[in-house]
Image (tube, rainbow, N blue to C red; front, side, top):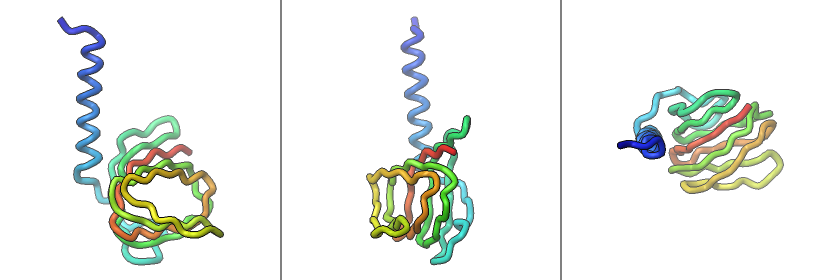
Length: 126
């Protein structure tokens, strides 16, 4: 006999493995990064969740750079692979790589330079 708790646990395990394959697997091509002014940063991704002003997913970008002015949303990120130099306007650049987590707040101004193809998990709120 299956209890509700057992069924919930089985569902969670199934969802976890599904999301794991989506995070590590092939991504949908999204094209060149808007505003790119260095290299040819091609993006791809997969949206895992989108509702109530929040989006979570996986994003990948090949080397290149772009400036961000008045970021439209707050985004928390976990780099899964790759390296990028991120410079907040008026500050020294910081190199982020696999395993690093950080938040860029709504209104942030700065520059992204993808040094080695980056794959990240992200959660964005408007």
